[in-house]
Amino acid sequence: MIKALVIDDELYAREELIDLLHDTDEVEVIGSCNNAIEGLKKINTLKPDVIFLDIQMPQITGIEMLSMLDPDTMPKVVFVTAYDEYALKAFEDNAFDYLLKPVETCRLAKTIKRLKKECQEQDYSPLVNEMLELIPCTGHNRILLIAPADIEIAYSDLSGVHIVAKDTKATTQLTLKVLEEKTPLIRCHRQYLIHPQAIREIKLLENGLAEITTQFGHQVPVSRRYLKELKDRFGLS
Image (cartoon, rainbow, N blue to C red; front, side):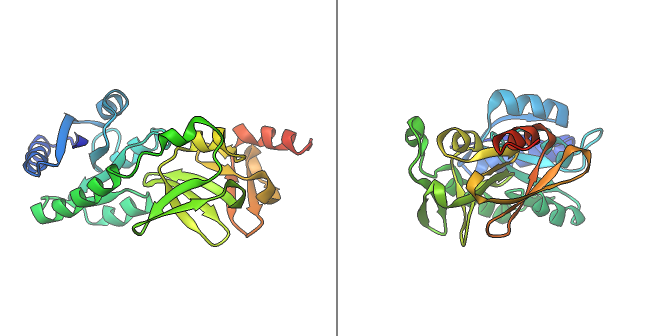
């Protein structure tokens, strides 16, 4: 059963969506709230698999709320909106899906089908008790096993954690924290890890930021927090 949290400031829309989710027999609505502040608290305490999130809310919008969450532990996000112009923005921000109000039963069923598949992916947690020799990645009805030495970048967004190698981009169920602890990848940004041997250039920017260019031409941001550690690693002043 998929555990869901519904966040919407409109009472009628919130209750209608909860009823539709109950009717699917695939989703357990473990909570609901009418604003982003309460939503943040419930996400952290209830740990839902997915949040159905209104975009246009007073004080803090749905998109603004997502920027306050930890990408490593963020649930799947389905935007629910009455405004078509927000649909493209939702996907630019890597939401799992979006639904237009009023929510249609057939469209919701497609979202639930995709969520069910994602939430039932194989649990790879037993693999993280020691250093990983291969990184399991999923996609297109297959499992890819990628050696850490072949990885240039790992990064997270709202749709999951992604692995980038020379000619491959894939999604893994492992978190950035696990990859940081169990592979040679190092942190260069809150949402990015990089293999030290893949670094070909570090471009220093304004305000203490930087940008890495990798062996195969990928661009990776470096935040102020991790730039000093990166310089120290390579003996740079």
